[in-house]
Image 1 (tube, one colour):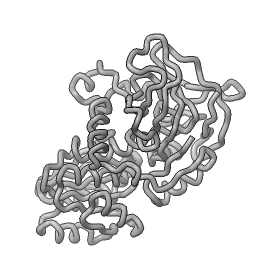
Image 2 (cartoon, one colour; image 1 turned 60 degrees about the vertical axis):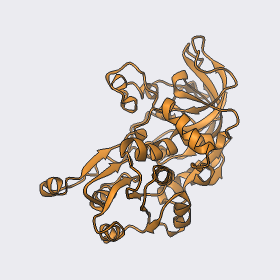
Image 3 (cartoon, one colour; image 1 turned 135 degrees about the vertical axis):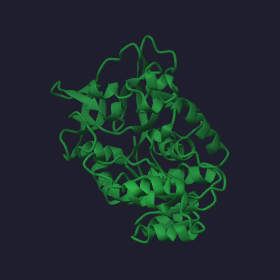
Image 4 (cartoon, helix red, strand yellow; image 1 turned 30 degrees about the vertical axis):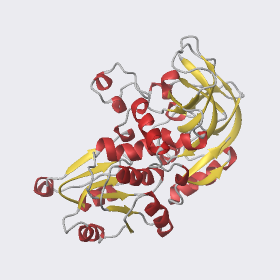
Length: 359
């Protein structure tokens, strides 16, 4: 049995229910969750922006302890501390073999397979294949990233999405170099992690952009040298901070055509705008044919920070142990399973950074 926050329909309320986990397959493991972060992608699943089968248990940024393993599992053992990987690569498709595991064609296979049953015997699906808003979940062993036992699991949970995505966008997708200027638009958990990534990469001018003035202090603690609210003058203000040119890099962490356009306009000629935020397919971005060639900018998409968690999590842990990466500061609220509706409201309104569900 597991206690889980179950979503039964688009935009419906989350109800805490008792579920029966399905028996383990030979390559699956059962994980007892310690904590799970509330990500904007969970809201996008709940409101239909991203595809999801219902009823479902959302939550994909989680960490916990392995309590049972399938017969063929060799990569983790009972008692191991693990971070959940919501996009586990198969290691054998074209993209994986081409060195792009974050684009694996089989990474979302688990989303279509029920992981539990409710009291009526009906199938329940795991959001993004992980179902982390539950006391226990069942995932493939390849979706578990072992972490050291002395790493607090509440902090480890953030590695599963926000930190991998934000830091990875800067270091892997944008490939920011020392001394370059960086603008980060949108200061949720991913955006704040991107600020830390820019600082770790040795960026010079680091501009944080968010409509909430209350986030300025935290943004500066994460590495921002300047803080600006979004406005029609944003590109002009950023040019004034970057020698009249515009930023070398803009990292967009919102997922709206308006903010993607702002990121594009904030970059210098020859600069790069990296889009991290997952938006709606109905939200169309417009660029003129002239400006694409004239400004010679690059607009690049970034899925999961362009990371391979098996490789990048150990790198992040090195930064954490050296004091270069602050995980605890990203958490601004703690809730229980029964408080997730309230947490979703905070995400929708852009309040705070990461809300963490404690079990």
